[in-house]
Image 1 (cartoon, rainbow, N blue to C red):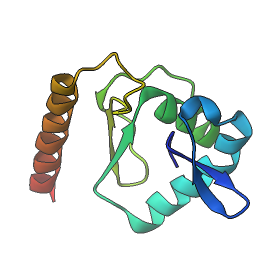
Image 2 (cartoon, rainbow, N blue to C red):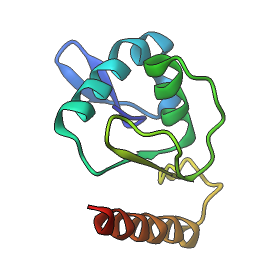
Image 3 (spheres, rainbow, N blue to C red):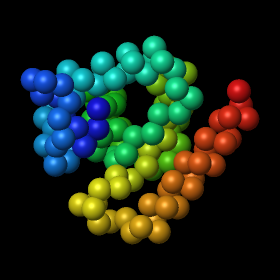
Image 4 (tube, rainbow, N blue to C red):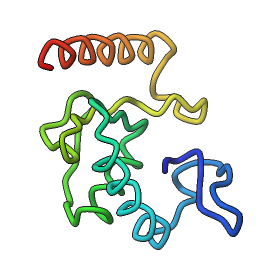
Length: 117
């Protein structure tokens, strides 16, 4: 689940962005995502965009917080969480260099967590 997809009658369909998703979408699908993450247990979960992660927390876990980009203190099951800026062209607040720097941080986070195993 993320701002680029939304549930529809035939499964997930593209959306224009997180603003196209409604609270009912997050209420329905955030617990499904959480269950899958807990079942498959990836080492890292990366959310793209504050809106997606904030709504996942709000509607999936009942947590209202204002997360910041980067490593999150809250895990999903055993999975560590990283929050990167939304790379959508509609998110003009981040330049290509900014985005590349965040993905470099994500790579370093991945390498760090691999050493923890």
